Amino acid sequence: MTIKTMDAMFLHELGDIYDAEHQFLAGQEKMRDNATDAKLKKMISTHITETEQQIKNLERVFELLGEEPKREPCAGARGLVAEASKLLTETASADEIRDYAIAGSASKAEQYEILSYEGLISAAREMGHTEAVKLFKENLEQEEKTSKLLEESEPALLEKALKAGGEQKSKSGGGKK
Image (cartoon, rainbow, N blue to C red; front, side, top):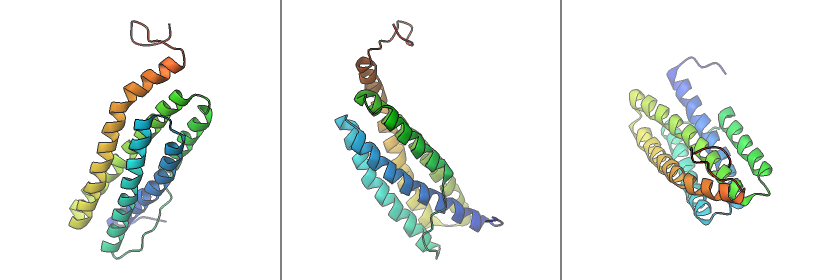
């Protein structure tokens, strides 16, 4: 599909994040089912509910634009989900390391979503789609909150993974002893 107008570009980007949210939702469900850390599992469960609402918000934006919701295949999300799935397989026998990998994979997805929503907000604002701006901001705030929670949880998950794997931090802060 050739994109020749900003309206077409905006619809493309909307369809892209709509597809990404669907892919990330399926990935989150898989991560939740494979996580062993109770806080991580709860965080993912909460974000699954938020992601379902985000998808509804995106459907509302399509509606406001007089369009049917349409997923534009998102290669970025597909890559992030594939990498997370690969890590789940590769860490299958190491619960604490898998939990750390899950948090890292989820953080990468959150950053992708944050950047996508920031771009959509800018475009929607310039194009006069005020209601869309509100819906995108709602989604963005949830993504930023989840990103912050993941960031705050990663040090404890890393510490647990290091202990479980027999590694210890050196005095300089990196490497194995």
